[in-house]
Amino acid sequence: MFDLLIKGGRVIDPASDTDGYLDIGVTNGLISAIGPNLEDENPGKVMQLKGELVIPGMIDLHVHIIQGAATPGVNEISGPPDLAGVSSGVTTVLDAGTVGAWNFGVHLHHVAGKSRTRLLSMLNIGKFGIPGQALRKPEIYTLEDVDQDATIQLASDYKDLIQGVKLRLVGPAVEDLGYELISLAKETAREAKLPLMIHIGDLIGHSSNAQTLTRHVLKTLEEGDIITHICTSVPGGVLDPNGKVLPELREAEANGVIFDPAHGRSNFNFEVAKMISNQDFHPHTISTDLTLNGRKGPIHGLTETMSKFMAVGYSLEQVIKMVTIAPAKAVKMEKTIGSIKVGSDADISILSHKKGKWKFEDAQGNPFTGEDALIPIHTIIKGDMVSLDWGPHPWGWAPADAN
Ligand SMILES: [Zn+2]
Image (cartoon, rainbow, N blue to C red; front, top):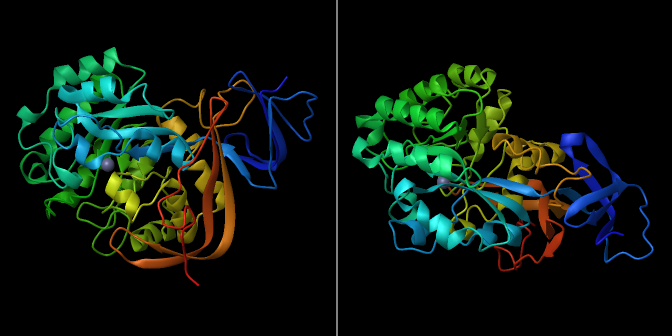
């Protein structure tokens, strides 16, 4: 009866408050049974686990996976979708604005439908998306770099692929266009009936105006909009010069704005993450901002980023929630993904949780240690098992050993 029977795992599904030793039956790509000691006389495949973690298919809310054309930047930074996705234990990835309206065709014709991973995207408000190598160039110098009509049209034509509009507040636009650009992006997202994701942290211009603009952003965003890079230490972050969380941040949280940390090569700072958390302010999701270079370090992958957040002080259950039901809600797909329930797509990540003394590095190269490592073992997407790759380290998926 079952195509796949997963036995002996510890199922943790924050969406249904489940944490227990349960078996899962999969039939025709869907979860068909959940319960203790499920039996089947003639199953297709049986996966016998020894207490490993069985969690909903993980969702990475911020990656760069659009490649396959020589349009500005696309090839230089992005990796193939499965590298950030199923090969890393992740079943859904969201490309955060690698392309804009004028080169969205790269996503459509060169990327979509060519990987096992479930792909979502945010369309960059800059019409050519992220130009230049390593995200270090801005996409918007003047308002001519935005094609509002084309952005709205595409969002309505490709509802399955486009989940939002993305604006990066970086470079000269922070000084020259700030308020105008934020209004234009918000208006575009509103007309497209999509959330707006705003990147804070002026990693290019290091403008002294960046934090003033972040405060304005926090007042402008509405329920369901997303701030990405919440743990950044570059100008434009959410801690004031005295290290206090901006009051506008709490107002934005009360208004239903979603906070995502997106590690990246510049935007996860361990001290900032701790200082925010100590003031009882917490990101809703965990994402990598993975690029080819970022996979080599300091990001490595979603599971290692989760392990870093456990080193900051978040519990196992919290970090699982931050990569499952929380990002599923952020893209309004909680009916399909982000939980383990009978009838839903069988997207499942199987991880091992290893205690030890692990060595990590934040985006500024600051070392820190933690006691928990999450390591991917198997990925199941729509009921199919997909192999992981070797992992980002010479020794595989575990973080560096601090001993
Ligand atoms: Zn990014």
